[in-house]
Image (cartoon, rainbow over the protein chains, first blue to last red):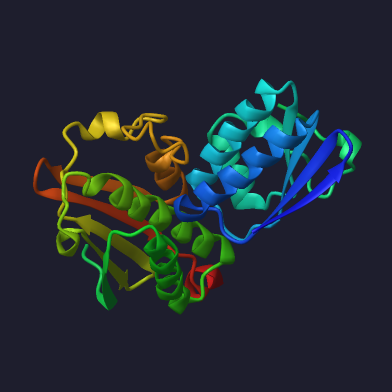
Length: 110
Length: 155
């Protein structure tokens, strides 16, 4: 499930539940719709309510980073728990992760 | 030295994506019997999810008969807290295992959700990952992890 917070040029998509191969497709379609319609300067994926993620989530993040870049924006991931952060690090793009619950201005972007 | 088998559960299910979460939850439940650290359970869930997803995505591309598209997961716990999980399919098999296990190698370009990191993730969260495969016969992925147990922590 997805909750969307639109703050002008900055959009936060808050993801709820597990991210796996089964759920990633629907999340991809929903997030791409947000990117397409709103063309955000910054898209933040908030992982606070994601209890589980496997490498399908890494594919989801990489794909959304490309999609948001295509409309001139940047992507950041925030509130990723340890295993999720470890997995993102394995993919070599740990720089998209912002420190947990960090101020929005501290978000690092891709 | 062969450790004594303490418990074994076998689960068989059709290769459907909705069974990815059911199988990893079952594996987490099985691992929980030793009361390990939460990080061990999280690691087992991730590795099982990767292995089962591989079977769902890749194993039965050439198999149209639904009743043949089956995945079997065997979970074993040995004395001392060694966990072994075998995820087996009877699908198309892997021609080049070494290549398949390389980071970012993927034969599923149509599935953007698969980043090609499945085996990398399994290896990083488990102690050992072994793959046995024969083309046309199927694939078994063997995951091993020494769980942190109360007994281990006391020492």
